[in-house]
Length: 222
Image (cartoon, rainbow, N blue to C red; front, side, top):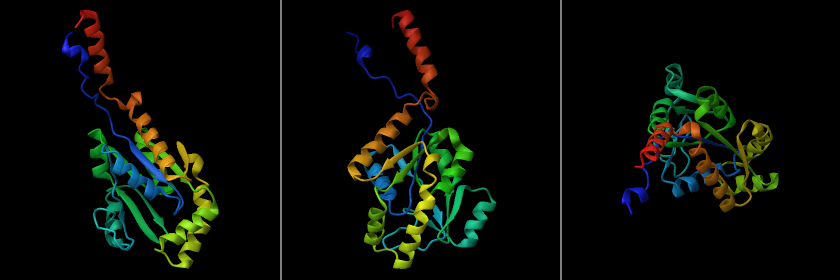
C-alpha cells in the first residue's frame, strides 16, 4: 500500500477564533478561562490593560498590563484598543495589535471581558468573534463565591451583587450560554464550543485549495 495514501494531510490553514467569556463577577469566568488555557495549547489569553491596582498575586504583563489613567486615555486616542470599558470605577481595554497578529497567524485568543467589551468587539471583528456568557446556578451561590474570594470588602461585594442582574440581562447577546454549576461540566462544554468553532468553513482559509487538490488527486488517481 502506498504510504502517502495513509499519511495525514497537512493542517488546513485557518483564521483564529476570538473566544469571549463574560459573566457577572463571581460566576466563574476566570476559573473557566484558566482551565481552558491549561488544557488547550492552541489558545492564548488576551492580556488587558487596566487602571485598576494589582490584587495580591497578580503579575504585570501576565494577568493585566497595569497603566495609569493618562496612558490609558492616550491608547484610546491613538486607536490602540479594540475595546474598552469602565467597571466599578476602573478602566479596562484590549490592545489591538497583538490580537490582530495572532488571529492572522491562525492562533485563537481568549477574552475575559464584560458585555460592554463584547459589544465593541462585535462591532469591529464580528466574523472572528464567538461569545459565551457564564451564568451562576443561583444568586445565593454567586454571593457565596464573592464572599469566599476574600478579595473585596463587604461594600464592594454588595455592589457587585446589585450589578449582577443588570449584567445578566445581556445574556441574549451571546452565541452560547453555560450555567456554571459544575466546573468539569462547564469546562467540557467550553472545549466543545471551541472545537466546533475551529471547524467552521468560513475560518478554514486553506479549505478551497485543499478541496481542489483533493479533486485533482481523485481525477488523476494520485
